[in-house]
Length: 386
Image 1 (cartoon, rainbow, N blue to C red):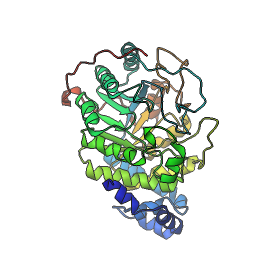
Image 2: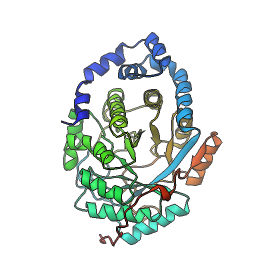
Image 3: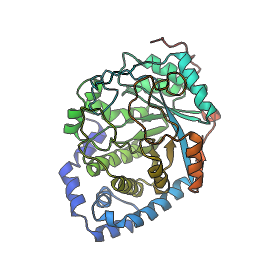
Image 4: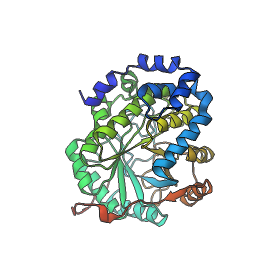
């Protein structure tokens, strides 16, 4: 049992719900006046009573964000390397049993370079490489070569791929990998088992420990999150916040950030069990900012343009722009390949850049230089054509 799993077991759902449901306005006001907030305080900020203090929470969230991050908003974009998947995650368009019949591809070296060149031309310096849950199609050797190619173009390269062993993360970090994103999807074991039916991802404990393995292996940026809609957002996000704080303590050489992916477009066979409203998402972000003042907050193109713009002053520190969730979706295949999910914000990078500036914030393409890296010179080699 991992250290965090032991910590998580001390906070069963009933305990969290009791704290959330029992909170009063007096409790909320007390927490707002507190500087160092406890997990019990976080539960108060998730309560219905706290919903009556959103303006006060927003002021404090804005103050904390500006104190720790200034007025900067980083920009990044995803680059999907493969949509081949051997897992059956019932909510996902890539699932092997999703019923989707669109084209599945794994990009070769030439195509990865072409996509990278197109994204650099749009201004990006921060990229997130993604794949499906298919080690047989995108083994660690493939991931290593993909990272090495991306590093030729971008100072900051992160991955959102299947869970890896520690030595595999070490290898990728040696090639210049900076960040690792792993969403637990849901921390509730029962729900987790119900929505992850096939593949290695169905191993709850191996998935839970992956982000800490990445941090111990040298990843400088660790990003966590829950898939909002799978389980009660208050309970799941409480557990996610505990995980983030645990990572801040145990992987202290890494920065920790949180994303807020919200289920909206899903395969026909799946019904979203706990829809999260805009107001609830705002309350979630504000509560987490007050609990995790030093954590980065990522807001993706899953959200509509107008709503994303309103989230900018509420704790956001990173935004994706000009995204495609299709392999080769920027220059090579267009809309010919299967997408993971449908995006809501279809603005160009320039339009998102201008929206950030219009809100009084400074959009940032990169915040450090390659000279700070100690990167392996392992050649990228050639990837197999698939």
